[in-house]
Image (spheres, rainbow, N blue to C red):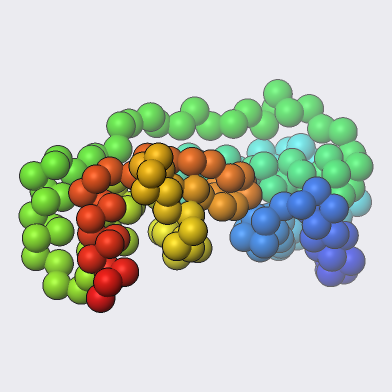
Length: 182
């Protein structure tokens, strides 16, 4: 099948909308999987093909969140790349299970920090837990992002490329100072 031009156009459409590299990769892969599953030329694809594909995905072991992401990729492909209107009521998003995340207690975090021998790892764990930073945000952190006077951390280009401030605990600040001195 001649999908390459459509997949290239899909990627261009996402670039024009400033989608992240990761989103572009996931959407491109999933639209390609959908096209392979349907086995039809792109011009002949219908809402029924999307429904059948989602039912196929649901029969596997994928989470509802993952299936919704894949479905969003296909909707984007139809709506933007192919410029074709679809009846989205025929392809509803799956209701996602909501549960609260498990959070370590202060005692558990203290135990982890107490046994951590590597000062760099200790600082990263303390920042992640105490300031609520993602791993990518910790890795991108610079010395000037730590504001010890106002006890906050400046996070550059976090999720969805947004800047934000978060708290800095005294405990974490002391660990960071130990790491800096070392």
